[in-house]
Amino acid sequence: MRLPRMRKTLLPQSLLVIALLGGALLAACAPKPAATVAPSTPLEALKAHPWQWVGFTNPVDKFQIDNPQSYQITFNADGKANVVADCNNAILTYTADDSSLKLQPGPMTLAACPPGSRSNDFVQYLSSAAIYFFKDGNLFIDLFADGGTLEFKPAG
Image (cartoon, rainbow, N blue to C red; front, side, top):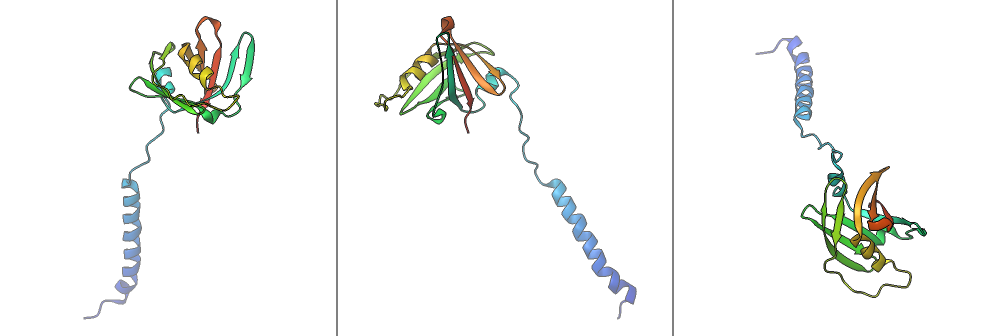
């Protein structure tokens, strides 16, 4: 039995339409990438990613950090903060709300860093934290008794 001529020409076109519709359906059902959600509170922003120390200011001194990748802090959800202080590493415990911050020193390696290192200063400054805030995407930590302000940028 022979198919009418019209059916032979419609069959490839019908298959093409079905294939296109099937592809569109599959694309519509594919999982969507997760949307990046900005932290909704300062505390969430504090824990959002590691921070690199980029500068320090106090009433008598102001300086920029030459190698910020060597001075980082990561605030973990468990109340601990991992610190890279040049050639040393430390674990600090912290308590924070949406503005106050208290960091307490914990275990730290005691390697002898090269001359000019700010390793000990960095950990000492962090231990004097009082409040924190954000400005232009950077983290600022103010120290007790006008002891100064640490400035951090997101690591990466």
